[in-house]
Image (cartoon, rainbow, N blue to C red):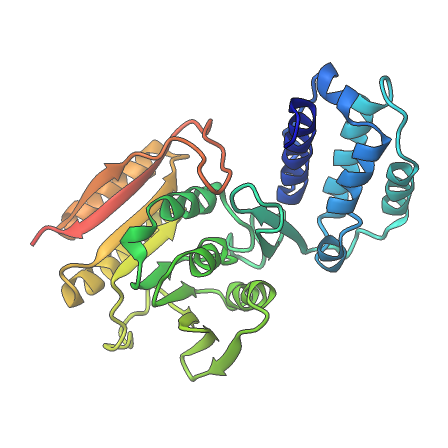
Length: 332
């Protein structure tokens, strides 16, 4: 049975490792916590992060790692003997050519088990080649967390994700929910390629089938599909596409896409009157959000807000100024 000191150390290390994996500099250490970060504990942290085979294979962003360890040293140096390998790792980062490091990996821990990780290749840039879909946005984390907290709603369902980005939400659902299938869609070729890469990282045993319209990865009884879906061009949308649930995150940021998005939603509600639709939003522009709600009304679509105010399995920033998850359904 662990004593309180061991529990404290383990919790502290887990917290630091999770922050590092996620690529965040939002951490602080109290003097008591620094006292626990002895040479031995620093070794455990290094082994769980930069020395681990997973992080070596899927490395984090070099600039972030440099800033993280420099911040860690600010806490350690006045109070602890610093592990030699921390200095060695920092020196190796200084010598590394970062000019061509356009992509890197984040390791998102699901729950408290540090081995339970979703690996996502992404970029720190907001826009790459004309798309915002090459990084994981906060709403994707929030939506994934809400879905895992309400797994029964998705059990044995066929799910369609709109604007999947690099695929974090869809991949997390596929890995941790007992679904029938999930189809991840986007309208940019680079994004679709990134989704396929990320599926391969997280489901290395999957078999791949390539069709003319989509790719399908099969994992046991689950199917993960990847398909181009341009909301402005839905004339050839297959009649065989009949999801039970539609999800989307951070897909209402641009006023010009609101009507095409609502049109896509309307197409699927006309095909399946009992379809469930959930959209997670970080509200950066109040006017755009209100315009989206008005557009839903024009398309005869109802909505209701769903409360989700704390982290459960996926860590996301609950201090964001305004966010919401809404459930959409046909008025008729």
